[in-house]
Image (cartoon, rainbow, N blue to C red; front, side, top):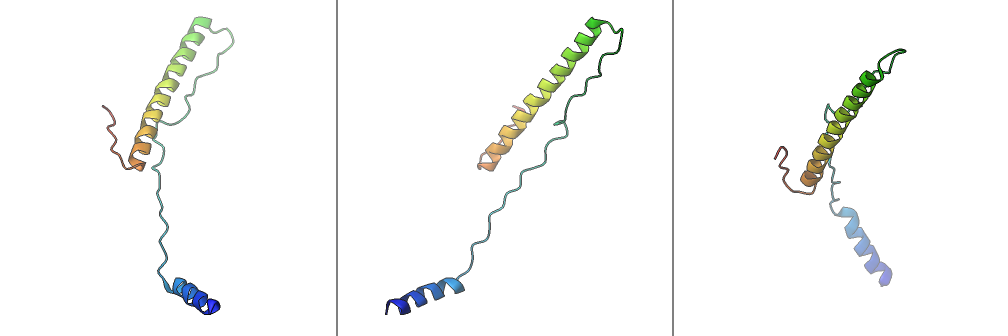
Length: 88
């Protein structure tokens, strides 16, 4: 009797519709999400010029990182069903 009821229960599972897989694709990284390239010093180059170039490179890299963090926070908010208020 138990075997018969299990067969009926399991038989119903084989004919029921399957649940489709939920899939979410994140957008590609923005174009600005790339490394900052800073020219290497040359022999005899003024150290102040080198320092200024390195400082500018770090500033550019930090701006890109901050923009990428804001973009990612927006993507996470939208992924969770919220609204992103980018640029505000």
